[in-house]
Image (cartoon, rainbow, N blue to C red):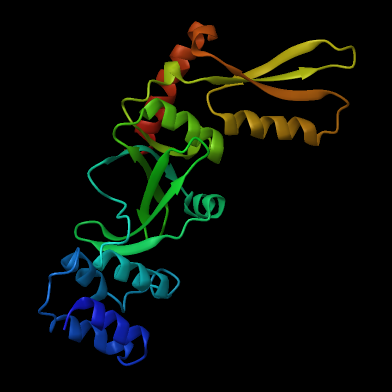
Length: 249
């Protein structure tokens, strides 16, 4: 018996849920792709999450079949390297990218939930989080791609705040990140700078707060190139990175 036949028998109702773990010990054919990794996951089919729902879903089993026959693009592989860590963001990233996630067991890490998605630039990203809780999430990109460009694209697309960040790759020089000026125009057509922000999401949040006051003024966000930033922003970038490090200690 190989793993593919075991999964198919289970999906077709020929094997009961409680028997899968026992039958895993009878597998003798390990010629399929990533056999041992998939087998480790199947042995934990009875495991449930914090809400007592089975962690391994039918969609995971179908993807296991693709992995075994070599047609599934494995996510955590050597050509990826993490860019940022974000807390409490699993639901948002899944809903915004409509990605189909994969849950599998990883020795030393437990059950992971992973997904692969592309943004408008064509850049490919993968994310990984704890499938039990889904609290802390890491996003990675191709090692050959710029970490700084990835950070900017991800922050603009997902609109997260600095308070949600748990990690930022050392190659992301925050002094070279574009900043965002929140500006307004009064009733006389005079423009004012309200504040400047490192992340688009933070500027957007403040813009929405001002607009909710129903003032008869116009608010908008302008990107600021690194060369146009003041010396204060260099100091702020150091403080932001320090706060992220302290928050995860």
